[in-house]
Length: 330
Image 1 (spheres, rainbow, N blue to C red):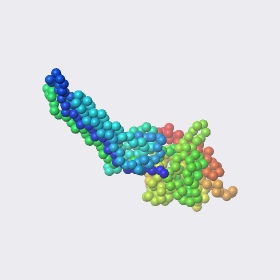
Image 2: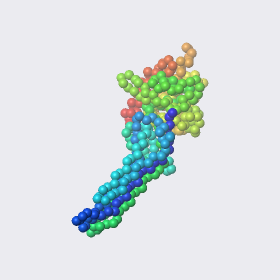
Image 3: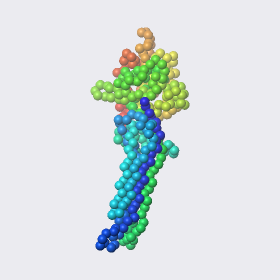
Image 4: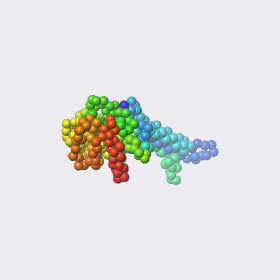
């Protein structure tokens, strides 16, 4: 089950208090101040872990707290700093403050870090306030409190190619034919209820990641169907493939509908390079003609069948070239 959204409550550690102390030692009549500083509180840190693909852990547990810093002690002993609370999330996670909607960061590459709650600073002990003219200060500081906040985690899958189409356009069949992914395939609408990723292996060691999202229907940008919930998963793709089945009544209208829904959701998403894929050509009669679609902004059109594997090699090569162009321009 793909859990791609979670809200959690985090609190960084409080800083330890500074110590008020004077040196007490036999035969040392004027030992002076020796109160140590308090330790810093631990941070709450998010780290991108490539072994994770979902936010499932944060669906079941929502409270996380870092360790507080230890108080300072006499003999100029500084308190130990609190341990950080490290939370691992999948690459592609966007982080926001739930209450203020402040953007806190995004973790795209494995190992990326984002501090979402800074630990409190430890207070200074009285030894830090000693000066040549003030040799016995009784001043010391309390530790600063940690930061408490609710944060929203939103996962946007990272893929090279995103498959876009209405329900039953053949997206899952195409993904299964071109990769080792095994999404559910059936002859009724909305068999895909969550996004799927597949790694497409080409010759000469070339690979690319392809994403299949639930079908987009008219009004998806307003929340109809399942498309709106998962459209964010193709926001990070480098190129798109619009799937138009050849057995529908008006392929041109289908293409324009998909273009319109993506533009209404995000102009940046609609501006991504794309190709047109006429799918299910195995359903055409022997003398059937593949329909033509006017798509002036696409880089190419293809006629394919995931069942008979017709045209898949040419499609994969063209998509890989489009992905490489985008990578080189970044």
